[in-house]
Amino acid sequence: MRISTLAFANLNRRKGKAMFLTVGIAIGVGTIVALLSLSNSIQEEIGAQLDRFGANIVIVPQSNSLALDYGGVSVPGVTFDEHELSNEDIEKIQQIPYHKRLSVIAPKVLSAAEVEGQQVLLAGVDFKNELKLRQWWRITGRNPETEGDVLVGYEVARALSIIQPTEQSPQKGSAMGEHHSAEEQSQFKVVKGNLQIAGQPHSVAGVIGATGGPEDRMIFGELLHVQKLVNKVGQLNVIEVSALCKGCPVEEIVGQIRNKLPHAKVSAVQQAVKARTEMVARLTRFSAAVAVVVLIIGALMIFTTMMGSVIERTKEIGVLRAIGFRRTHIIKGLILEVATISAAGGFFGWASGLAASWIVLPYFSETGAGRELNPTLLLAALFGAMLIGTLSSIYPAVRAASLDPSEAVRYI
Image (cartoon, rainbow, N blue to C red; front, side, top):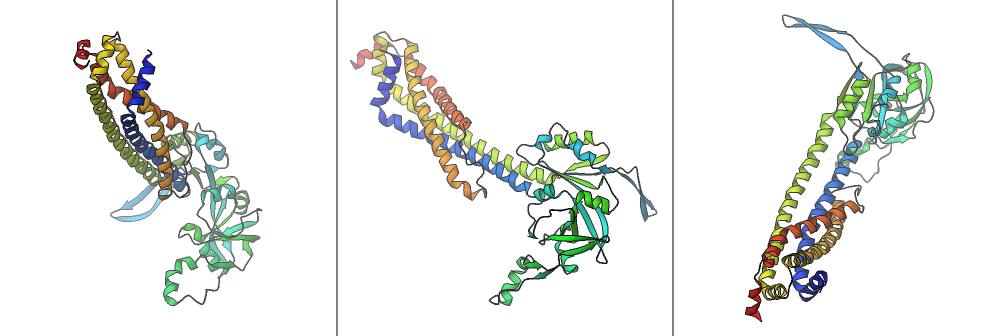
């Protein structure tokens, strides 16, 4: 008689216990799979959300300044050893070893410009990358298409009478008016389509809704056009880089950019990086702690069940030993039973854990990122379940194999 045939026959005779062990292992594996899936989904969600916040690496020209004071009296300081950024620096950034980890590179040139008789901060940007970086912008109008198109900040648009508020619904009372005051800032229409900037005509492509940031007091134009307009051809004032992809080594990216641009000051926005790292680390630690507890409980359950099974099957094991089965045969048979149960529990646990994570995912994620089948997680669930089951059954199997064949005499 083959060991495998005997093992499967024993499972068939003891369906209740086999089902109990399978369900127990499935619950443990399912809990771990659900936690790991949620952890991965939330990590991706945090990365996607932080990408919307803008750049996490800022590059500005390197300069040294000397503060001057005497007897507690301060006078304007002296700035020396100033450097400049240029369009060529963008190409150098794209050559760093981690260039594939950079999602957005947004250069800017800044200058004061006269607009309709008023001094306004004018920014030259690469609109394709800038709009990708500033995903929270709400533009009334259209995106710039030609070099003469500009985007106007909310405060500037109000000061230059470019926009007018839309008529409010008469049903709104005074109490509602106060509640919707922030919302009303975005309820306007563009009534002026042209501007004179630095003596040249420009078209107002759109107006950026109020953000509460410096954008409200700025006008944005196409980079090369603005550089010519303010006599800063090829010059840049700041380069913003977004590298908040999953698992990005931001500090290493900063070091590589510094090596490429020794004349620039490169700094990471640590708040965004630390926020993501800390949140994911806490969730990972929690998942690991729960996983350890679940694994210990599962191992104890298998150990206890197998010890009980050995005592219950003393007659059977004694008879097998008496008719010539070796200790290795007994051990292999028992471990094969547990491995089969563990594999079934691992599969059902993976399926139930994945389904549970998908069900609760909307409560943790707005985008539903991470809702996908992961073959690696399935293999890990099967391997982990079989490993825990096998290790937990080694001692009971060895004890069963050590029974004296003469024990069978008492039960015949």
